[in-house]
Image (cartoon, rainbow, N blue to C red; front, side, top):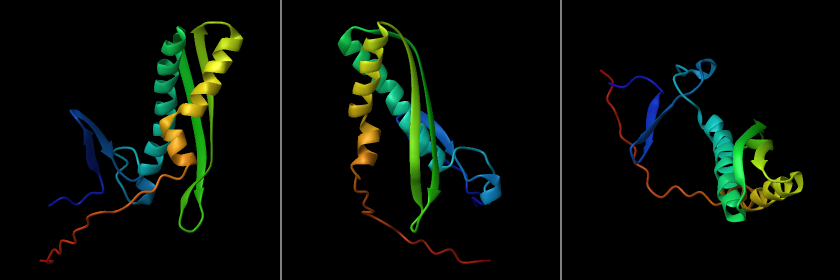
Length: 132
């Protein structure tokens, strides 16, 4: 019997361990959902910098994205999410700043959050386990 909050998520042939923090009752074996949300923001922006740079013929050497935010409200949700980006590329400072701003406008995860993407539970099953 599985007696842990840890789980493995997968997409294609890639896996990721998911768990609650130890102070929240988990084993701390993987990322929690909130961490994954913030990582998704950073990952999306990073990937999109390279995509948008390619369209402009800009060679990007490195990207660093830092994402911060808090949790609160009723129901609890991410709040005050901010991110910063540092892009090193073979282009003028003006061209790099235009790339940074364009990517901010088109990043899919960011726009999904900004525009309030609806999330719907479509199927649920309750499986009762008898205690022994």
